[in-house]
Image (cartoon, rainbow, N blue to C red; front, side):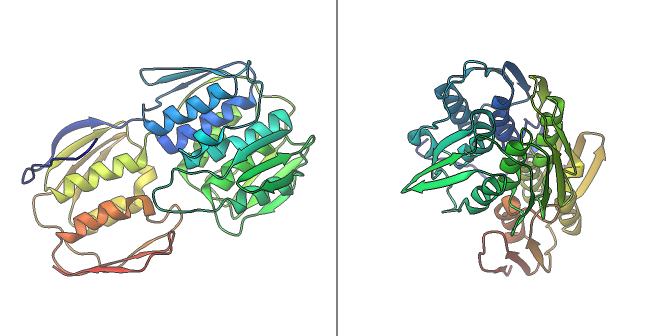
Length: 337
């Protein structure tokens, strides 16, 4: 797409069904290689990152189909744990393959991931977690090799509650010998979804959604069918867009419990939000009110992935709003209207 042409001045109205969460689907697709057989994942959106992950899995030898919102993966033919550099450079989330491939094959070769528009984000916590499980990590320039003929459970404390590191350690630890405990773990809904998926395949994981996750290693996982949770960032984006345009939008297939911080902020702005099960109605007819101070922090606090969207709403709010970005170490910003 070369350009976007936007004709403004009209409030958003109507009904929209929210698709599955990309950030939940990607680690779940990667984790599918832990079981040898046919895995079916429902509610998977057709997005570029999803396509790259499926291409990566095909390169490993898996067979993959994406029909409608359903992905079918036959992981039995997987025969290599060498992830191609060309595909890894397209998407940072390709790093999710480290844990499951190491657990299945005893070795994995990857490259520094790319595809992150917000700049470089290191994977040190991923590597430290795998080392704690007994892996030997060898870095040769841009290439990373992890070897562990035998993974052993361990107590792992994360210096920062990294979502990706938490998920990679979980996926590696499910087939490790003994118990693994992750403290200061990330608490995001996507991690809870990964726990549910792995447990459905036969894993023994407890604690996702809290800062302590416990994994009892098992010898084998079995394929299953699973449905991905709704995308909370897409849901939040539509909610903010409805508020900023003073519109009225009905959102179906949502999980309001995953958006409590945003709902609280929008209501402080004067936005009306009605919740009925998985349906939310968002409406606003007046100029929004400014918010004195908002700070992005790890879940369940306000998510950094909704910061830019909320900035649009605050830019047309009545008064001065201050937002502080702590996740990406950006400076505080202020708008005066």
